[in-house]
Structures are given as structure tokens and as C-alpha cells.
Length: 142
Image (tube, rainbow, N blue to C red; front, top):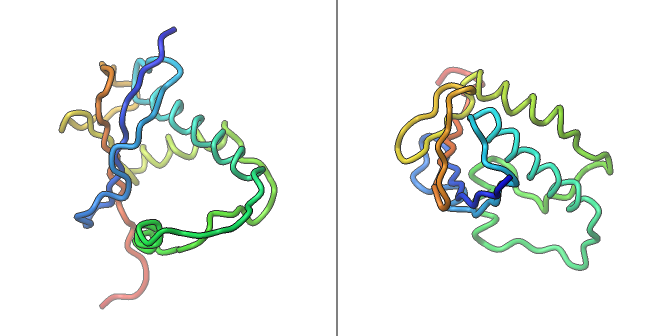
């Protein structure tokens, strides 16, 4: 079982600036398909979230870039959890896979869309994967 170092870029449809540009991610094993890739990424993020929830804050602050990025998503905050409950990996993976199936986000590798969860992947060391999140429109008609 070999590890694979990839980069993740996250964009929001309609925005010129990337929300996250080339965040390095080390996958514990090479995913065979998109389902395994999403599951691995979610698992890494849940572990980071659960560990972050336990770390005490000495002094909270946000950089101007963090404020700008968070403002684009509609909420600016310090990322402190409202409760001490740990995130459930299984539920988080299920939610991420459902969101993909529902078209909430799309995944691209080298400008090519990966459209099926069970589509075989060929990830090389240092590849950049782009996740594009789509914003749902809600509210009144203009």
C-alpha cells in the first residue's frame, strides 16, 4: 500500500478566484476510483476536524485572506464548533457521495471531468484535482 501526494484545488462556480488553491494532500493509499478518492479525502478532513475541536485556542484571529474566503461562502467565523460532538466519518462520507450524485460539485483531473463514482482513476504523484462547487439558488425572484 503506497501513499500518493496530490494537490486539491476548490473553486466555486461563478467566482474567478479559487477558494483553495493547490492544497497538498497525502492519501494513505492510491484510490482506484472516484468513490475511494472522495472517501479518503473526507476521512482525512473528518480526522482534522475532530482533532481541531479538541485543541484549545490561546488567541483567535483571522487573516484578511481568511476573512475574504469565508465571506465568499456567506459566513465568517473562527471555525469553532458549536458543540463538542465529534464528526462521524461514515455519515460524512455518505453525505459527500450523495452531494456528488446530486450534482452539488464536480471533480476534474487534468481538465477532464470525472463523472462517475466508480470510474477508474489513474492518479500520479503531484496531480492536481479540481473540485467545483455549485451554488444552489434560493429565495425570491428578482
